[in-house]
Image 1 (cartoon, rainbow, N blue to C red):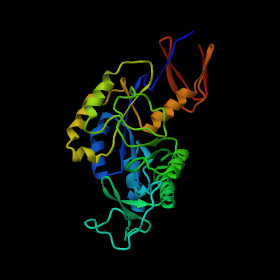
Image 2: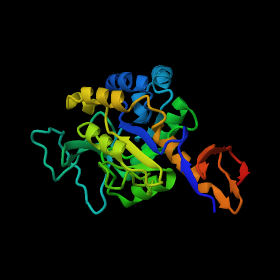
Image 3: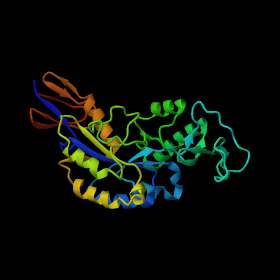
Image 4: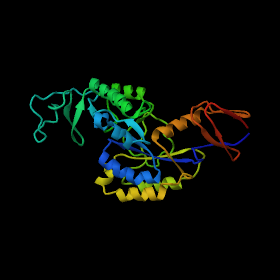
Length: 308
């Protein structure tokens, strides 16, 4: 029996990517000025309302070459299951507002100020949230093309609303939540694509990446993604860490496959679809797959098969 082992493109076992929220162009610019020369790619999770018609060409150019995920139009929270909301009649004043009530947002119909663990935030009810999910995807596709926004990233956190969770997880190929996984899963490609998260953030980027660098080859394809906002590096004074990350781990295509989250997940799906029979390997996917057979490097084009 031949020994068959799968690789990423360029015959590497380790992928590196990022997942960056909100589309803060000021800090995304600094972020990309550091990572782009190092060849490091990833995905930006955007709220479609950051764009106006006059900005669309500029945004398309700015984010060209990177993945785009839907971060929900307006970045709202949604009403939680099991809570009866009481709407205040008086105008919202953060200094005197009663947390037992929600307060209409005067300048945005359908939005309410609601208390959260990190302060007052804007919330909508289910029907508006569902509409913003759909509008966010369609508007991002208008800007970046039909292949954009196949994946979803929760604003704030995974919403504690069963209807919203079911809708989002049923509609999108992958759904990212908030929370650092570090190396607890052995840097495996996330198995639950409807509830996955990143390995590192700005404050532990170098520490976790060093573990990834040294993680032994166990025969499986590996995954490293860091997040979660470009402005985190400004807030925490970590731009030098990002520069060091780019210097040490960028421009090494023989060691790492630099790709968007979408491209990594697509490639894993292609690998999983490969059909191995006695004397034959078939690739029914739309992507070229990379493998070795008894140590010999082989590529199989989409829809093709080889004999072994």
